[in-house]
Image (cartoon, rainbow, N blue to C red; front, side):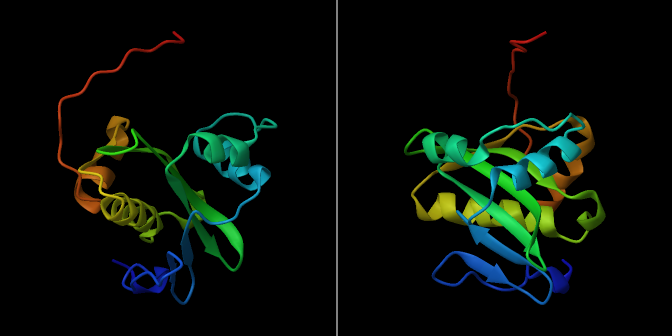
Length: 152
């Protein structure tokens, strides 16, 4: 893993990991426009006035922010059932910062915090092009699952 992205360093008591170029923060502060900018670019959709902060405050176990020089360059959301299962959603890294270990570190921070909270399982679903990232870089095992598109 690229040592310049902070992935080789342990989190301090605040849930932050800091390296020479990146800061990873569990439940870090962010503005909704920052996340919306990342999300719209990462998922190829137009920006909208979405209230990400309110969404995660009401529905999430936690989230991780990745910053480089103060700019939000990565983000991931974690929801849970309140006990055994956590679910990773919306992992996104700004295009110019990809392939530096930032996405894997976002997921690692999620895994560690879910484990610390007593979760037994953390789940993720993904499109086929992300298979190597989640299975090889993040350590997920393939598992059968099902999904229904509610908005065909």
